[in-house]
Amino acid sequence: MNFENQNYLVTVEQFFLSLKDSGLALSATDYDLIQQWENQGIPVNVVCRGIENGVAELATQRRSVRMGLNYLKVYVEEELERSRS
Image: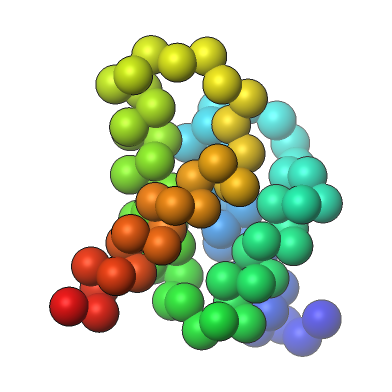
């Protein structure tokens, strides 16, 4: 893993954990998903905005869901589409 890769991973990890306000690390599945986003060339700011949108949506629904990045994947994809238009 090179420094740039680690920086992308750490940025998304820290951002998500700060919004989630619990946990110290992500699951292996979450780390794999971050790697996929990076490999697809999705800018880290787009990923973070998508995560933020998903967390906000969950908060409005007041749902008690074990939040993982896989659940928020759709919000990242929506944000990517918005950023391309």
